[in-house]
Amino acid sequence: SYVLTQPPSVSVAPGKTATIPCGGNNIGGKAVHWYQQKPGQAPVVVMYYDNDRPPGIPERFSGSNSGNTATLTISRVEAGDEADYYCQVWDSNNDQSVFGSGTKVTVL
Amino acid sequence: QVQLVQSGAEVKKPGASVKVSCRASGYTFSDYYIHWVRQAPGQGLEWMGIINPRVDSASYTQKLRGRVTMTRDTSTSTVYMELSGLKSEDTAIYYCARGLPGVAKPFDIWGQGTMVAVSS
Image 1 (cartoon, rainbow over the protein chains, first blue to last red):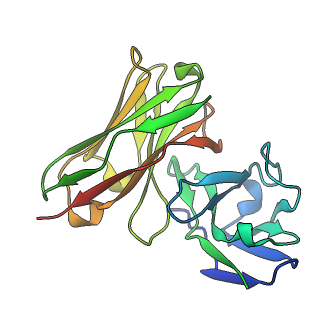
Image 2: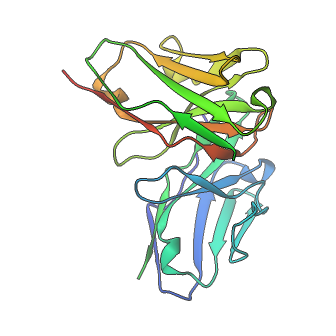
């Protein structure tokens, strides 16, 4: 089955930029969605179709997808951005959705 | 407002079955698919399957095929997820989530989650 690889953790100072990669075989040919999950809460979509922001998501969040890596970038990081982030794609070969293992973003 | 409201927490013994409900409101029930996603304690998200409420057609991840069944009741705008042959590894929070019809669509609305604990 299709595997999405994310680093377990990313640490960033307030005001700096956090970059969260999501690796997958030719992921550039797939639509990638990103979810933010804070402790004790359900996930929330923060980026869809690689680089589209849902209503209400700050412009500080941006996305890209090319080759074997999709990336979620959070600019001017704030304390409220501290959360787990998951990438997601549809695995058409196995007719199922797949999530990455998740990246915990810590704001120093 | 658009929301998905799930049933309450469950405690089950190994080998038993559990049925979790997800009631939709604030939108036309049959216009969106419903996905089920689970999250074991301290772990990541795992997709379980999808149901098309318009035609009551479901598709499941191979890992759970044979143990999971997803159904819907259009009269109450409710989707159900039943998992049988429960094992300790099925202990998790179970979420329903809404997606536009078709595959490769994002999940824009999530239920609050239902904790299912499997223990002897």
